[in-house]
Length: 260
Image (tube, rainbow, N blue to C red; front, top):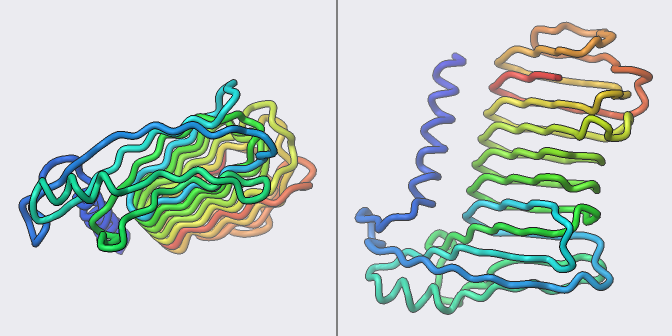
């Protein structure tokens, strides 16, 4: 049962990768693809959070000591001909607009361009003090070094977050999730990680303090931490780490869970 489920996961991710590939595709009605790059910067005045979204494409956010938000995008469009693909790609606009304290970053497509004909990959550099929200339907999400709350969702793709210091809410339908806190991050935190088909790896701070619940319907649960357990380690776990001040919820339907 586990083998067939993981094979299904690989097949779905393989189809997603085909939809996002960087070469000219000679299947179906869209035989050509055109790609272009665009860079954009946005001021930080009054901004405390980022909200990044793309329907198909990868999102990569990296924290750095910068005085503005730096956005690099790779825009790819599929069409019947390369000429038409180029025409549509050049009509796609990058938008970085403030909505109160949140900077919203997205790509705006022309009206006659279907969602499945466009993919946009984002690489964004911003100060670590910003909270982060990011969402894609098909694509991986990577978040590195941000000190505030991180929320990330994707339907098909992996989520990887490192250098965390605050609350996280990470969810995918098909894909693995990995979250690593900075060793000196606050001991008590709120963390939710959930996937339907995929494995979860949670690496907490050095002095962690949290109530932990973990469920793997088809898969194993393992922990490297001294944990006071009140449930089975096989398919579900309920226990506490340290003083049990925070909350950690880990859930997968098909896949393993590791707590480090």
